[in-house]
Length: 276
Image (cartoon, rainbow, N blue to C red; front, side):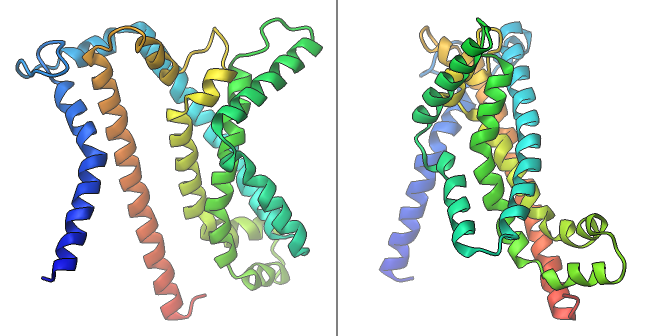
């Protein structure tokens, strides 16, 4: 083993340690027998029990999951349709311009997006004569807005890999365009749709800045609830909650990678057998 390879492995190990050491510490202290954040006092699951008995935290978690599922579903549907429309554009300059505009919410700083959306929603609410203009609807629109570019970027490569001649052949054989899409195109772009949906879900799950500016007093998400608790002393029940969220996201990513690997394997087999 050369000196360069040893240095590269040490560098990679250092990066992984820097990324995952805080999470490992958080997980360990979520099982602490006391409320100390620097001294272990035995193994206990009391903080997990207290977490599930905390109605305010559980309500914030429920709101976060509902928001993530609904916004991801809407963003995935809209993003898939938008990808098909953008990909079908004949004018390359127009297609490039639309893609550039689509990527703005992804490149724009979140604080700018959050403040601008808040001003828009407040202005619209004032025009409609509503005092409480911020709520579930406004935070849902905001989340769908910043999720769309990620869905489009996930679906677009799969759509471009699809052979359009097969879709046209299905239509020539008498298949309805909509049926031909679901029979031919949809299975090919499904891995990209699933990846985009999972990306949108995880982005909504941990978003704080945009949610902070666009949510109302009657709807509180988990990141905002945790932020309000940081003004006081954070108890280990928040470590327990963060550990559960980390494990859930980690499992989702593993499942997504497995599904992606299976899809790529099937595609390689089809190419090898001359199916596509």
